Length: 331
Image (cartoon, rainbow, N blue to C red; front, side, top):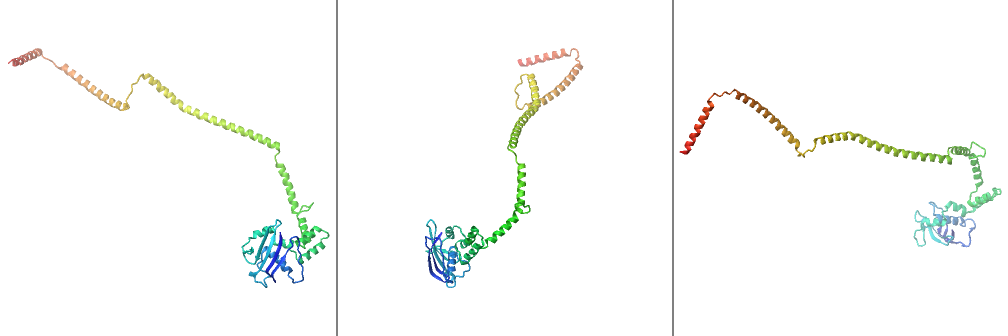
């Protein structure tokens, strides 16, 4: 990302002050006498890119609501983004036509670089340059450390590295046992040994798998055999329960054969049988009563005595009676 131009419309003691950047250059140096506005220009760049802070020291001429910075950013592929930055709580980035520009669009041109990093790497003032020089003198020939310290504005890098070395020594020593990292490495070694002891060898695994598959097949065969035996058991139980009934059926069939041909009986044969039994019982009683009466009559007949000549006399009277009846008819 590069600047094409930067215009301080209302910022600090500047009004409509425009800076034109040479597109062919990758480095720009601002210089001038004290109080010329070098720091103001440098701050205008960060305010333009990242927005005005809540409190600002650059509104001593222009009111906060009037503060304006205009500029245009350019990507390496030639894409441009002109916009105006104003002070406010929202919609602080505006297009040249006054429409809002999203911060995400500006962030795309910045490639995600935050304000602190931008200041330390690309917006160096006199103070940070002087601190970088001191760091170069103290580096003792460590060029990488010096350049990094100078570029990032970190003048205390050596002290920080020394502190890091000290903390690293507290965490790990090559032949130590007390530092935390040494303890963890020892514990890791013991765990690796335990894992190695507990791990199964390939052949052991294959043998176990083979035994497992064999046992699984045996279980399946046993299940099938149990199902077959259970089915056979149920069948035999049914036969056991059926045999007495079959024997009874054969016995009844034999008795039926002994009866010979049996006529077809009506459905109410049971009722008819009961009625006939009652009639039979009643007839037996009447028969018995008649036999008793017959016996009495026979006894009485034996006791009857007919006088001699009575039958002849009766015959004579009967003949006379018939003759009289005949005579009356003739008259």
